[in-house]
Image (tube, rainbow over all chains, first blue to last red):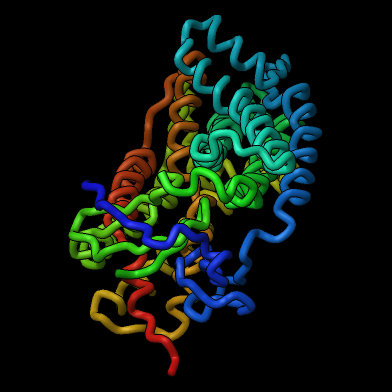
Length: 214
Length: 199
């Protein structure tokens, strides 16, 4: 894969030029059009109500993050004995049995990523609201990584699905999904929507004028 | 020269026609603007037909078999969804079937609907509308995360009993390779370029 030398003869943005780019098919339309003539997506110069919407979703995710981590994720019932595990006690179980690579994967996907995602988006929102012009390239990159990585938190939901399917031997051994599971799934879905509703172009709107051509 | 605006920073920039295999990145923020892929439709189309077959196998055949003493139990993908629903976790069962069955199936069918006519340089009714949904659904298909989930569960379950991988697990791994290859070989702009501006 090679990079091509691109040129920007006019260092302007689409919105300065009175154009709106379709977020799905990239077609440029004059501002004022409601829908993309090519693919039918709604056109907005910027995502609508990006800042309040993203804040609302982040706060909801943060609230749900608590029951998701405090309540049990799975309950193993073997011969009448029941043992409940939270996400964190599951991680500890893997460390104790020596499978620390798996402990690391679950810790990152289930505990660290959702929390970091909420923190990163909150920082980006604050920086945009304060009109910061601090390292816009890096902030945009941070947004891209956050958007890409978030879906992997679904890992724990799928682990529960497999455990529940496989260990289903009636009185001898059963695994049940715990009350934390729906909360946790909600955190993952809501933070995905939060990342989608944030508009990284706002980072650049606030620092336009300076450092436009590098 | 074609004019594009970066979706991550809104910079307008002219992109010269790309050679096969070249990519264009935003000058200001580094986001990927375009990918040009050689023979864009035939190869993804072939791979997607393979993916469709593998997807059926993934859903129809056993995923894992649990063996302990004389006991033996086989689990399919659908077993997990059914068990979650039986335990009263309806939203969870819905989310798992959405990300694992419904979205991948819809994604494959809609891509075939777009790529079959596109490979013959024709258009089908509603083709661009369908292709838009292909792009929007992409983050919601989570088969690759499910594979990681199966591997983690295998480790956890191996302490309890002997677990044998089934055909569906191998089909899933192959499905992921094939769909990843198809996605990276497809150049969406080639589909969009088939659109003719209404006079």
